[in-house]
Image 1 (cartoon, rainbow, N blue to C red):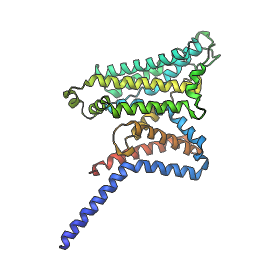
Image 2: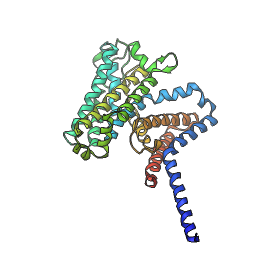
Image 3: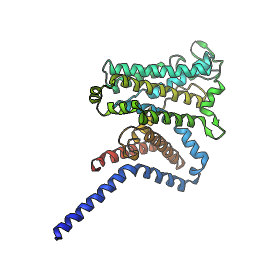
Length: 344
């Protein structure tokens, strides 16, 4: 064999090894970084590895983890729902108002909150599908609308037992014990109820998107809506469904949050939107799938929770934590999509 042929064979082997290394990095790189971060925080602060702290991390991610699972549906159809954080905050305030001010049952509060979430999702879907408003603009407008709406019943005040509301009304009711159990209780005295709810939602979302015909249609619409329409998929119906599901799950997240804090806090929305969308987007990088998926979304939520918990233990200021979250998100997506052309 000539020297030139040997050189060509060696170059081909080198290229193949390089391609395999890149495929491995794309598929497992994020999980490796997550594992190394887990080891680092535990070695620096051994208390990080204690079971109580690990459950605390899971409990801390439940609300925006549930929200992220909901927003996965619009992402799958190549859309986005920016109203989920405000819908969750509205659910918190409505739950508190119904139980604490109107002295209704927790069941009524749950049903009304879920119904409102579905209704707002349906409005989003109508504006996007029928009125043809771009999803970012429609859901951004709905976000501001709902943010204002949540303050109207209480006159802009937080709601708790004994609170004096607009018109001199004094709240005499209280949260039902079984309602509070959704956010503060533990199943068998071990697993926080809120964590169990997040896991159940994750399993249901996984089953729908990964194991059913509906899920295949959702992904087909996200890949090429016109092609999906040509093969008979009811594209508009599925797009509407995606936003209804997103709104309903956001309402559920608000119920869990209300049960955790035990009051209607006007600041309850906080950074829920950013953390939820960040979790869902980080999910693109998990196992290199480069698309929205429930497993990646939950891993992304847990990673954000682990990161914030570890940085807090290291006494990092909150603004540094936000910066690091942004760096991680950008790096994960850039790494996944930037190297994807090398996949063979």
